[in-house]
Image (tube, rainbow, N blue to C red; front, side, top):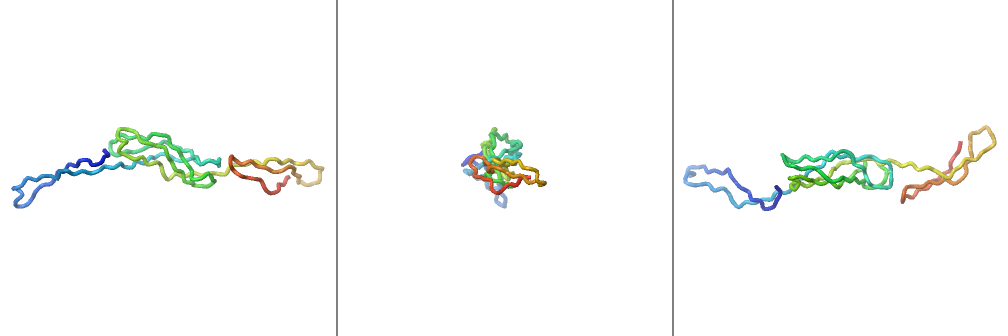
Length: 170
């Protein structure tokens, strides 16, 4: 198990040579060494793409798993949380993960390594143009329709968005 200053027992040295029979071999004593924690990677997790929502939260998919060394008893626990680097639209955006922990008899011998290499897309959200009406007209052999009102859009919380241009009705 993990620890500092752990006693090391040495065996296996023998004596050879013409005068070896005149000696008893004494193995080295008083040796100590540290055993540090091994990294244990959480696998089985992916990230789901989403439509822009002003948040950096990423939804995780899959089932978290770990593969401990030998016959060690270790399992993954906790709730993973995914995070995009920013809220903006983009493809193959990196997603970082936090929240997983290790449990089990031998969990103390490991450092949990959160899932890495996850990416997902943030696609554009739709905004409905409002405030526009169509004006009735007398038949004139064209499909043109006059528009009335002022175009407006309402972005999601905290976003600054406005409608520009002139609409054309048909």
